[in-house]
Length: 161
Image 1 (cartoon, rainbow, N blue to C red):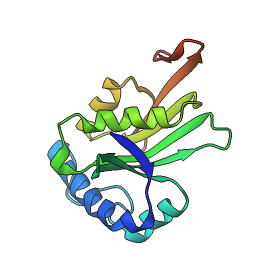
Image 2 (tube, helix red, strand yellow):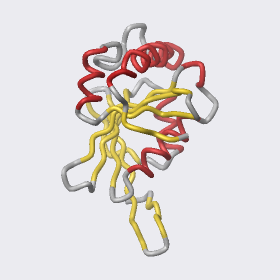
Image 3 (tube, one colour):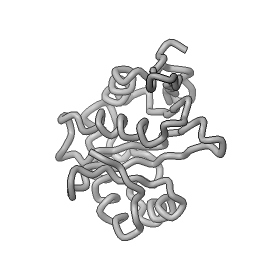
Image 4 (cartoon, rainbow, N blue to C red):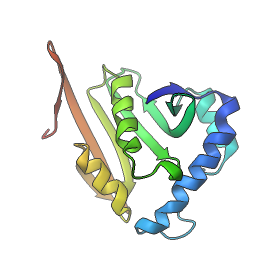
């Protein structure tokens, strides 16, 4: 798998996939229709693509997922605003691979942060399994962080900071 910045001509496919992915949240504690803001908005996703925040996850020529990613101006911190895998690819390890691609895409970042709803059993277990640690719980969301330290022998992830 690799990730590339999405072009605006891919947005409709990405939005269709976003709808399929987030509609499965009812299977993991969500209420029907309780999806992220603008998860089904072509205009919002186009704006994210034009600003360079929308990435598509590809396996060969197949679009399997996407992510909304924000890097701070120092390149030291990355906020993962959203990731999603097309529902036809769920439970096959693609989410793990997507997160690995995101972390590799930003080798200078010392920390990665994200948040997910408290009720979502699937995503909370997923981020913990990937070494993300809870930094706070607020307003129905769990906020996670993963720090890393770059050393001369490669990247060493430090999970207890």
